[in-house]
Image (cartoon, rainbow, N blue to C red; front, side, top):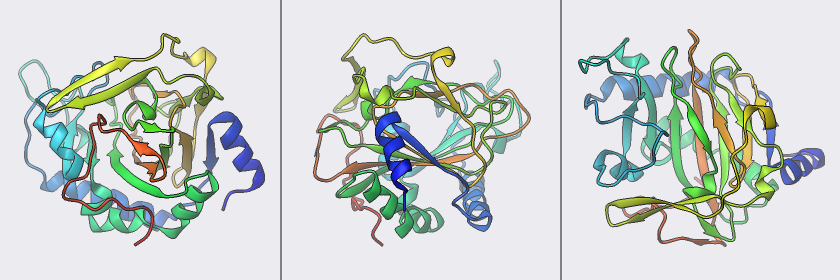
Length: 279
C-alpha cells in the first residue's frame, strides 16, 4: 500500500500522511453513527469530562470502564459555573471511546478494512492488535487542547510497537486545531508511562527531555478522508479550537502481538476479543 518513499518517511520522521484515501460516503457513515451515539447517550453528568490538563483517572469508573464500552466524554469547557451546558449538547461532547471498533457496527466494519491491514504491514506491524478506538469531535469554540504526549505512554510494549491511525473525518486546519508533530521525535526517549494498579492510575516520569513547542514542530493540516499514521514515541499535540468549525477525527491505537504488552497498562481486554484487521 505504501510506496518506498512513504515507508522511508515513516521510519525517518515518525509519521506519514496518506491524503484523502477514505471515500466521502464512508466519512458520512462514520459521522452519522457518531452523532447517533451522542443522541442516544443520556448520562449528562458534569464529571464525565475529558481533559489533558491532568491524567489522574483514579477511581473514575466512567473512564476506566470505557475500555470495553462506548462512552461519551464532555469537553472541559462544556459547562458554565452553574453546571449548565454552554452550547447545544451535541456540540459539547469531546470524544467517544474506547471500544467503537468492536461494539458499533459501522465503526467495526471500518476499523477492520483490509486496506488498514496492508498499511499496518508496511509500517512493520507483524501481528496487529487493535487496542483502542476514539471518535474525537474537537468542537467549535470550546474544543480543548490536547497537550504534548506520546501514545506509547498509554500502550507500553517491549519492544515499543504501538502505532496510531489518525483519520481526518473533517478537514483539519490550523484554524480548528490540527495535529502538530515533532518531526523525527520518535527517535528520542519515552518521557512518561501511564500505569494502572487496581483502580488507581499514576503517571510515571521516565525522562526529563523537554516537550517540543510549535516553534520546534510541524503542523499537519490534512483534508477530510486523509490518514496520518505515526509511531508511538512521536511527540504530538493539538491546539484548542476557537473557530466556528469542528475538527472531527477517528483514531485507532494498534500494538504488535509479537511484543510484550505491559500488565501495568490501563487497557486490557476482558470480555472483548483482541483482534487485528481480520474480520
